[in-house]
Image (tube, rainbow, N blue to C red; front, side, top):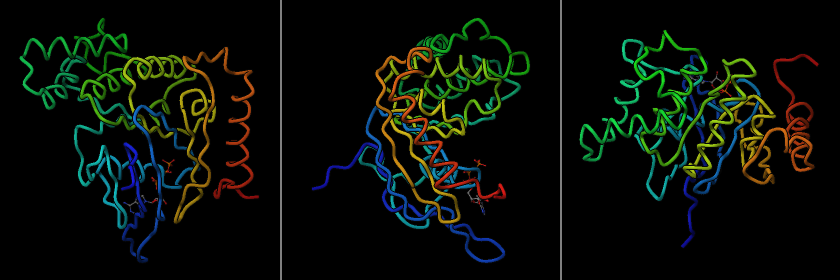
Length: 266
Ligand SMILES: Nc1ncnc2c1ncn2[C@@H]1O[C@H](COP(=O)(O)OP(=O)(O)OP(=O)(O)O)[C@@H](O)[C@H]1O
């Protein structure tokens, strides 16, 4: 019998009904991700990255194909797939601690109240946010909100962490700090991650594999690139490594030569 990967997308197509008939966003996508792997998904705007991530999250139902996670069919949202969105989506009336506690309560698994509180604080500590535990989202910066969003996601102990352009709205320095946080977390927790990004350097720095999508409609995987860089990675050390420049150049050629941005006139 075929051994399935930890996260396996088999022949995933997504069609949306529109007033002009069915719109095919994704066409028979096969993608296999191993446990502990960090995969970045890159492609031009509108190619179908979020549609693919939402299918794994169970938020969008594929028209064809099956998704398996740890041998189980994915057909609805669940706490085993935590999502971090670009917009942090914290509840504004709750404090930082309460926002994380809400997610922890949903996945408590018989933990006592005291154990749950310890777990919340432990996860806030992983993203260096314990100092702001009693603040509300409006009282902290965009980067801090994203840290809390990440803490909330990992506190659910998900099988896979899904990130949809998590740092897209942040300035370059805050973004770099958050990338370091994510790298440290992944080293500690050995998380399986699928992350959408538009940033070529971010993809190469963070990912074990960069999956490049063709332009839609009917997008497919155009190239699947292994990033052969040692871990732990430090942006200053990897930037001149041949594996870094090779991966970067492959992605740039893919995006700007093989599959140019369809919305930019030639
Ligand atoms: N509910 C829907 N109904 C109809 N079409 C949709 C729906 N959701 C997405 N689409 C279309 O599917 C295609 C893929 O959209 P998607 O949001 O997945 O792209 P994306 O690569 O994530 O884009 P971006 O990088 O801009 O976020 C687009 O053409 C979009 O207009």
